[in-house]
Length: 304
Length: 304
Image: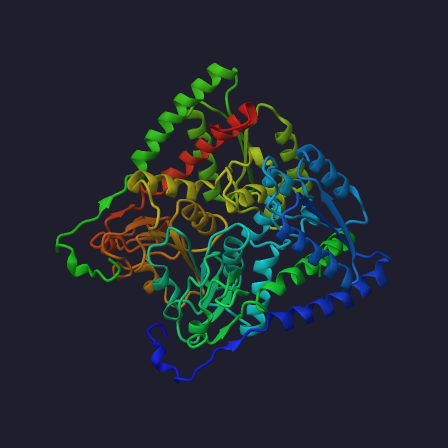
């Protein structure tokens, strides 16, 4: 297996596409049904509070999408849009109020925060059972030691796609490129918990291509567009591309590209997520899932 | 480098031994001096409470060694030896009392606990700033996201030996065999924070030898005696052997062996920890270090 070369593939080989968009749509439908059942049982509708500080245009788009999809899933959506000059004390006071509010089951602070606000302190102020982004220390710690936790949305989305595609991943070699707290590190811990052998590459890695070529499962989250070339991929591997960058094309338009050179990779990989339509739609679907999970934790004491 | 074979080493090659015993002795001396300086400054002597439940003979030896060395380092040592039939409520009440006791800066519950006591719940009851074993969720989470934390003693000991031997480890490929919460996982996160490319192998890994052969730094913590053979090691690699098993020899005596077949490995590795005298003595030295760190956290708000 390890020494297979791309010449072992037929010349017209095409990876099958992992349809994250379709999977996310099905997830949202299931969540909608679960939200109704939850309301039936408890007389309570899960509520998500999203806090945006400042006027970053990209963040405004993200936050609006989150609010709309929360609403579409039958949940209550609360937006808190605060001015750029909000003090940390004001922000922490708002989080404290939301922590105590029984109508709010999930709290999310859109990152990055404006200068002067400590993202770590703010994130950790959210009650662990309302921390639907899974970025607080308690959830990170529970994930690290293998306990149930609220899991960061993007790596959770990747995991759900992988489970759907591959089922049991025990013993497979998963290589994660990128070691961020948001994606790479929680992804590595999740794959470890699935029984994968896990390698983590990053900016200091000497020969990322050689490591990537060993991967049965390759997850790429670097923010470097088209970093991973076709010859970095082991024939038949499953490739999850978390990257998303908007580039200008020759005709003056723009298009989205990932961290994987898709046109090359599709000729070698066994399965691959496209960009757009792969991992992207899973992130918000997982936020909705986490909000429902958080509501169950708070009203039922467990999420099962 | 990657393709180097052992034939590139002279036939009489011998790895240099990493003297954990000597390093730990020096650490203890430094800690003793720091403890005196801390007392000078605050009029307070750091205190460590060790709790043992039941009569496991190996645990009794460990606990006694910890108490003696704490005392030798100039700190106050408090032993709490409870009977096998101690209830979880009683144990949690003791931890609560020690959490509130200003004379106690570190609390350690010797594991494993007797059946019926939930080790996870008990460990998490210790205040994070007194959790000198670093096993609670808050410290695990802080380690996972790269924040200062109280770090589990054995992986901390391995890290200090590696830093002393290698200095900057950025870009080196570290392979950790074993994925426990106690050693393997925190070790992997520590090496990642040093800038290493990190791979984690475990019971489900298909070809552990092939992965090990890529390691510039190989840390082995499996509990399988002499699992790692000479031909698993890249020539010149640094090998840290966390394992320790007592075996019977032909003459009816016993001796300690590690997870690495030492006689083979010493002919290939660049540096290697012996068993005994390698990692073992570092664990208690790091417990003393963590107790002093904990005292600084509590009296100075930081450990620097």
